[in-house]
Image (cartoon, rainbow over all chains, first blue to last red; front, side, top):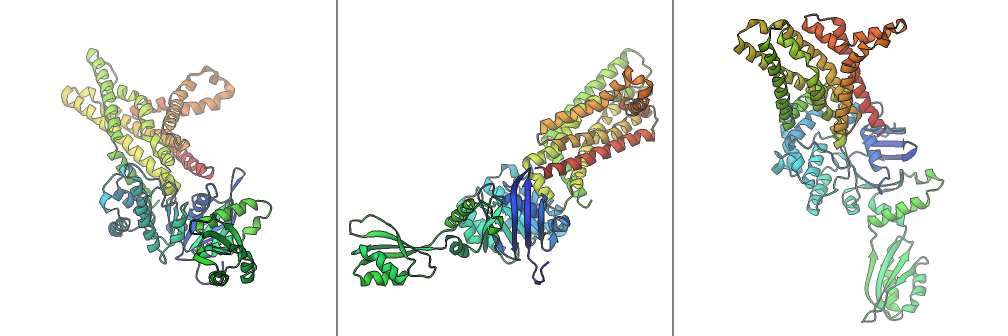
Length: 334
Length: 253
């Protein structure tokens, strides 16, 4: 479609999916360049799983276009299916098979040549730390192992695009770390689209985040961009003692947008915690510190609050609920 | 059809490692053995003019009614219940390959079960020493009938399994369908209201679909291509409906 030579791995334009009158996905557009890890965030029922299923060709879209590595999903599903590794929500696995048997069967279905398959299975078992359980029956494995079997299966055929619906759900912190490293190790080689509820998870692994709510993209960009864009303000916290009353005036001289957002109680040493906020994204910490000291205040600590992706997520979804009114095109950004 | 063999061999392996298969096989063989002994007892009391094989195969519908639902109710219903159909259909596999692979595996097992009853005839031949009890005609005809009609019965079971994600509902549905076509056609065939002139085409159709009549033709050594066509077209139709049913369920999931 586009004339730019590097073809995007995933291209979604004006995707709409309606279930019996309910809009599950409402006019979503995004592109994912090759080799990027992209996170899909959204509250329950936002349309994440539906979008992923449409990307894999499992569900048909109501309207819009989806293409994977340049192949449209609707007209060339077979080509698309050869290029994706998909791990659905809740990771369904056949209960009565052994891990290695399952991987062998899936490898054959994914058209891996029989003589390459054995060594490839060894590789993914190693990669996902599953060697110990390779001869165990899947139904008897713990959740963490099952999850890793699902991940191993999705990377088995080395597809250029991997789609995982909540890959880290139900894992303990140690296993989450393994999965995160695993996903990070795919960076550059494969395009990975993951959805998750665990926000720090997404923040650490993903190059870019898409926040989706009620079937629409409400924000997208790198975690840092999102912070700036969605929250649009930075916050500081200062612990000071002395002539606090002069602070609002002082702040006005530094930056007109800077104001006191809240004050804490005075502690035993006479210090209190004051929250400041500004719409300015530049760091004004030094100026605040200098001004306070010149006014004879004693300052014990000054810090710039770093909003987490969680704050961004909450702000973005709240904003979309507020603006749920009549401008569906408002979220269109690229 | 590249993946048909992969799915087929996988299904067969799964059936062979499953305990249920062996339980079903033991139950099937005990029942058939029991019936066979009963028939032989009748023969020991009086000399009858039909071969024991044709009496034995006359009871084909008993194992059909319970074996077919047992073998097929799981195949598609379980995939949908566990959600593994989603991972299956997101590989380069078509729905038709999945349905056919599962169908072929179930059919193979069905034939293997019936095949094991050859042992009964072997024992009879070995120990009775009475050649007229072992008439090869009805035996070959009977097995041929079982093999051909099994195509349709298993396809009906697969279709029932595609309709529900609950295995027991699928089982009961397939039992209902089987009773409907085996006993229902016989009942309709004997219904007097069909004898009217205006309903003659309908009567012909019912006559054509008489499975018990087909059975008698087969054991008498008459292999009618119209009857073969009946089973083959029925099988193809049931399988096409299964594929459509699986795909329709995806659209409305």
